[in-house]
Length: 272
Image (cartoon, rainbow, N blue to C red; front, side):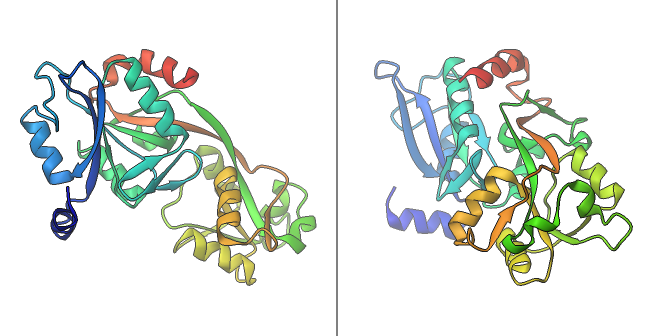
């Protein structure tokens, strides 16, 4: 699809998806990037570019956190990361085609799953409030949550208790708006961990850099990646101890097309 068509799709607010499906020429897999409006028309008609088999199952619609290295991140209409690799390898083993969808914001991707516009989110953290309507896979990766501080302040903190204040005013922590890190972090906040949530991740790191906050809470591997990307490795560093463990999972609807294959899918994403 050419530039004019891309502009038309973008102006209409449709965005872009990538379709991967078997077509009739020998059953080979093909990948095509098409506008979301065009993709929906193709899926509704049971036809993909190149002429998909009418007997083929409906593609599984994938999305993920747009900025959570190394588990998922977006580049234009593409979705990358360990979660993407594990999900697509598992779906290929199960003989299921898939469609990649990008949303730009985690909240939009999560809302799309809840409203039936996405079948699988490839990167998520356990949240018990979601389990009534949504189903988590088993974890496919493990990480931890860290406090990132000014390098000169690393020696001030020897354990989690130092971030809680221990009888003196607790240091001020910041986190990106809408961030959530699981029940273990919720418990720390209930014990007195001070966290303000506002703005972007980059903005929160800059607040710490210039002394307007004492620490920024991020998932460890993603936080290190951000320091490298933003050129802050000589200014900020993670504390040498975790605040909480974190398991990285995938998330699907309880009435979605993968629920009946959850056991096989769990096995495949753990070993892909």
